[in-house]
Image (tube, rainbow, N blue to C red; front, side):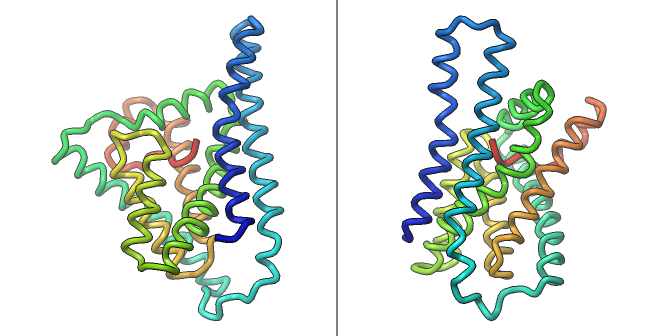
Length: 235
């Protein structure tokens, strides 16, 4: 694996974990709850922004590498991005049906609930959930992890391993199947188009859609839509 890819993975892990020491230090400073929450969330947003900037810098070399002659055209990139969005929603709906009917899992994703609680308190966090998070996740889980495995194995093996890692890292084990299915959908459109921007756009669209549903629809409507809506990826 290229050093720049390892650097991106380390950067992502540091961004995810760096909130822990900040939260501990802030709690020991005996700040009032509001100041403590503002400090912690401010750092989390800052860490993700920095992680994205570092990732983009590390990927600069990609511009000089030969391009795949079979990659999707700009028009098909848009088409597959839209298809990917609907495929993701359909895949999650099927996964949720399996969870409900066969596994008896009724509750909504705790990951989604926690993220939306944060978003309602700190609206600027939407940037992380809807944009920065999906960009980083697609670069790491599709381009790097899946991409490297796909070169050495095949789609099923690469998709399974990267999908399991993607599902586990979201720390929502009740809904592992949903995250696993999502990973396969994004891997599929990545292979079909050979452009990481396609799963990025599909992922961003999906997260934005879920945020809009959660923020602007009445609670009783959300309960009905939850049967077919996506579970957030990010965070």
